Amino acid sequence: MLVNMSKLLADAQKGDYAVGSFSVANMEMVLGVLKAAKELNAPVILQIAEVRLKQSPLEIIGPLMVAAAKNADTPVAVHFDHGKTIEKINQALELGFTSVMFDGSHLELDENIKITKEVITLAKKYGADVEAEIGCVGGSEDGSEDIAINCTKPYDAVKFEKETNVDALAIAIGNAHGNYKSTPKLRFDILEQVEKNTKLPLVLHGGTGISPDDFIRCSHTGIKKINIATATFDSVEYEVRDAYKNDEIGGYYDLQAAEVEGAYQNAKRHILIFGTDNKA
Ligand code: 13P
Image 1 (cartoon, protein in one colour):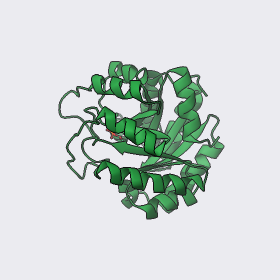
Image 2 (cartoon, rainbow, N blue to C red; image 1 turned 60 degrees about the vertical axis):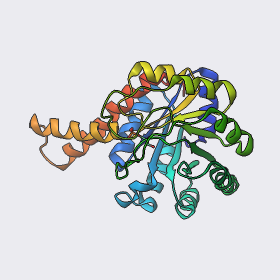
Image 3 (cartoon, helix red, strand yellow; image 1 turned 120 degrees about the vertical axis):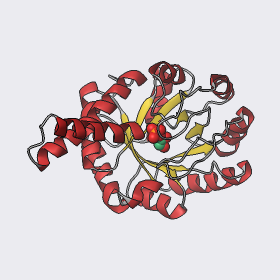
């Protein structure tokens, strides 16, 4: 069933786990994620980032995501990731997304606060939730920009919470989008400071390549939403290559099944690490 992200994150705060937010680019990925969610009786978030709309137009994939969530056996939120323009954020809200992210991480804090508040006012009209980001997570969602990591200052998080009361806050603690070039060293000292001084559900972007131990530690230290994109795309590609190598693709529908399987395997692995199984 289609639900609000804030409900899933409030439950995750009570239950001390994190919810996986899986980026999808087509129907097969949606089906794979929801198959894992059903099998593990887990709530999940389906998301797509604004930079990905070149490949997957919002007016086509958006209704598909919302319909799949409504049809799902477990609670599913549909989220617009890294919203950059009010135009696209508005379109996602019109299509029935239950949350949107406004990514003002490149702006001065006061400007980020100002626009986030405008997005909150807009989203409220649709009963939708808002995620914001402070500090800078490395790289960009589609790898097209080499954005440097700029760790969140805990006192900025306190100010941001007080002035916006946003529904979820993405913070930068040494995490980056895409495959890491070297093992990431997350700044748990910063995360602990933010957790201690705010009540907001925190969001970890750049989930691909973070170790299970670090995911678990994050999930017990205020991180309630974990974004996974590259790992899904890589898993789908791997599964398709493997099926070809093993001569398992006899036609288009075998290829489609391999794509679903890749997304399913990846979502299942992460749901189990995040502790979201049997939390629907
Ligand atoms: P990864 O591609 O590193 O998993 O990052 C996903 C993400 O944070 C999407 O916003």
